[in-house]
Image 1 (tube, rainbow, N blue to C red):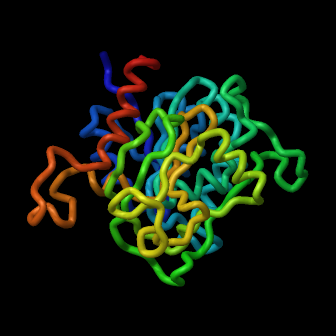
Image 2: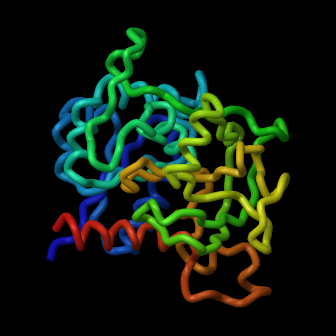
Length: 278
């Protein structure tokens, strides 16, 4: 059996592509890192892969807003190809800046794309007639500063194929615009009802808590969401930065685990591909 194929999309300012490649390869994938310009030159190339990953960083310097430029490139230049990719039952992972990209392109939370229909709903808004409706966004942290710290995440749903409910992960965050907010209360209620809230920030005992456990002030302590199919996941903390146990900041004092907490995200994705797409 061949290895699952992963495409890491990078752009000017991406800085977590190598770590993401390492984590996917450790989980058993074959990985290519391609600049978005190369993909736009040959759009069909994405169909050679089983997983698309959009890693962390500061694409295009976040000069307009976090992830906005790359999100527009996906939304207006790769819409048809991404629809087909999702329709083929494949996976998409966005971390930190990649999460911002998925949300601002309308690929998450995509509340109107049900499990039974994999076609992305096109918005009736003429200003965005070539894109999908944006239902959430990211804004500046409540602390007013760049937050670089380790956080606890609790899993609240089995909706995503990337992870199982009930686990608590310890992962780093590094962002200035990490506050997840929704369009309105109706969107939040749909997110909760559809069980698309996958990760929440919690304290070390697994209870929802404020700053610094919730480092950015995200509504409902949301740290990660999936789409209705469970095959697209966006998360703000970095699983690729805790793929090895020695990346834990206190491993010399607390003992060395068998593996880093974040590797499970990548291993589950590879397992899904092997069981369903190969």
